[in-house]
Image (tube, rainbow over all chains, first blue to last red; front, side, top):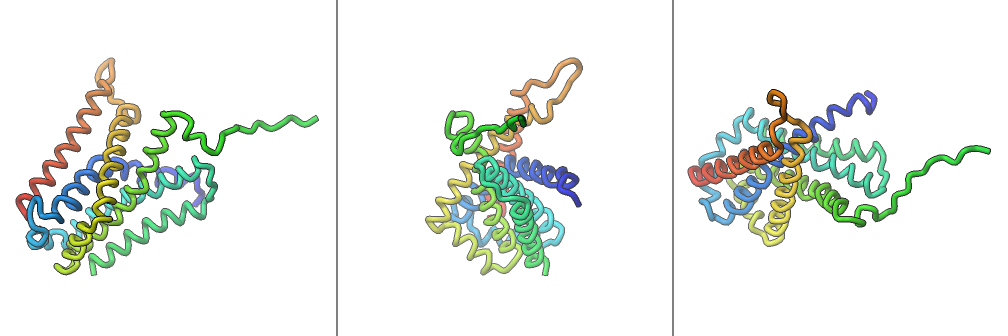
Length: 115
Length: 130
């Protein structure tokens, strides 16, 4: 498929990811990656006990992984454009390499979570 | 005589030349910690859906000083992304009501309200389940 026809796809995931990141990322990082692991709001072990079954549900897992995937895509897409702005002309192969990386990581995470 | 082609001149360090460009570049650079934070969240999600040992390993890694520093940088980057993203909302999708548009400030405040609601919900979730 030509690059032109793919534009709505990769800009679409970019803006979805940007919105997800803008609304969720800072709260997620602060609460789950800082406050929870240090036991400030509760014990990480209890958190696992209560929410493991929910996160292990295939549909819930897919939705959460898809949200994170959109953030990752948002990041690599923007990074490609910074390289362009900084006059680093990496070309389409690198661009698809970035997108491919995000997709491969997403599929890998689905694989280990589902099976 | 052939015409000289137009070549747009832009110096290699153009984005350091004024505050507006610097802030633009800073905003775009938030993509790096944001993407890395997404990888960290992927790991955490897989661990939560996996074994208790995997979860303990992830939670333990978050308390490593380097990871803490990274997480704090990522939080700052994410907040900057939120600020610029919310301020772009009224420009990207202005909402018309009758003859006029909903004021930009209203949309931006609503977005911050949603952000705060997410934070409160997450804190409550952790307080209840952990």
